[in-house]
Image (tube, rainbow, N blue to C red; front, top):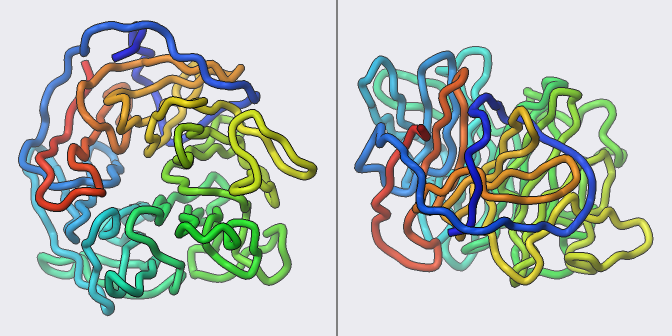
Length: 340
């Protein structure tokens, strides 16, 4: 693995600027970490309310780690969760009441897939769906986006995948290949860039990470087609080019990435803002990558496992793994780690 010394571990889900191709620095051995939880099966998102940790597992459970005790709660939805390939229960956003959550999940059948954004609350031992915020987001075996997060403006942001249809990321009538912005009640907010639309930005391939910096600027990380993974600075109405351009290619009205992986692959997922810039969960590199203000990318922490998401609680830095590829079937032997 490639790498450097770790960054300071003080960060949140926030992010950074510029626009140059990524440069990865040279190698080190895997760094030390403490396993907090074993026996997880394809966790996808991790969030915190105080010192309590919440995490989703793709099969349809929401786990809560509080005062050293871990409890799995099933998610009861009005439409069954489709746990197939890369689809299942994915993104999680906590509200002011952490027992009332927002979730992104896959639905339908293997031949007719779609995604939903729902609210759920803890009722007894299960989280139960209480309301649909966004329905009928186009689905795919691998490219579903799946991240949900409340921005500093109080609005909910949602990432969606392109579904391998080259027309949809540039089509404002489709929710595929976009970042969406919705009110906490599921309505179209004032200030969205396209009249009557949930679309905040377009031209995305498979964005799975979003974060904000201390000034409130938004960033997103997305998987490229063959290499050319990207970190983008997101603006209202911005067009990030897929599938018209990738990497250093440019076009009129298209926004270039802050950083991209060139011909190599990061397989980026969760994204966070640290003291010196962005921190990026990398599945392929088995590491947390650091993205600086000028777009330089280096390895901040070599975890030696496929990292799906990163999180900090105060000065404590956590990560979750998904060690099975979504292209393969079967269980995934995963864990929650604290990076030392």
